[in-house]
Image 1 (spheres, rainbow, N blue to C red):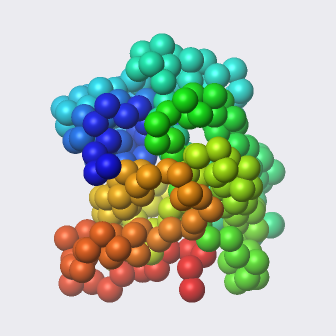
Image 2: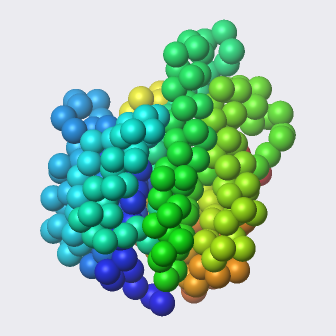
Length: 272
């Protein structure tokens, strides 16, 4: 299978950034995209809403369902899944993309921010998987793909921002556990992480990261597409890196993905 035509993807946080890029790549195949995100009204600091995303997806050739959904809330997630199934008849793929970030140490991390990261990142990924599971089990080629890094206990990734690292590693460990539990049922449960920092609007909220030294979200979207079109059976528990996935697909020149090909790239967090 090399196309996602007719497949239904439930993507969290798909109103902008990497989530939207994954949605648009699938839309070009003619996929159905459920945009489950909180952004229903414009935010001057973070452009893009579920409605603008739906318009882009439709323009790219897909079918879109925009749903305002806070993945911390079980009732909202269940309602979003029910709406997706009512509209498209099922769910074939869950992409756990939504994530909260706060890069600070213990003294500078308000507990409100700490709680938000844990609730959105690991708990939200688990909740969405739980809600989608009955429908994924009915799919011919079901996937759960989570935007999370390879698990690491290296203190260099924990000391600078324990709260955020705990939240992201929580997504990784949820992936590991669900892969072990659901892989035998034919669901591909895997994680994907970028080799370099990706240029998204969220970077504007993190000082000191020059956009010109980043890659475009398209590299993660193309890698996700390659993963999600693979046979699901027997394919679980992998912590994939976007560049490595694309190399396996025969890509050797990555310059088109760079914001500025003349600049050296910044490696992403959690990778050696």
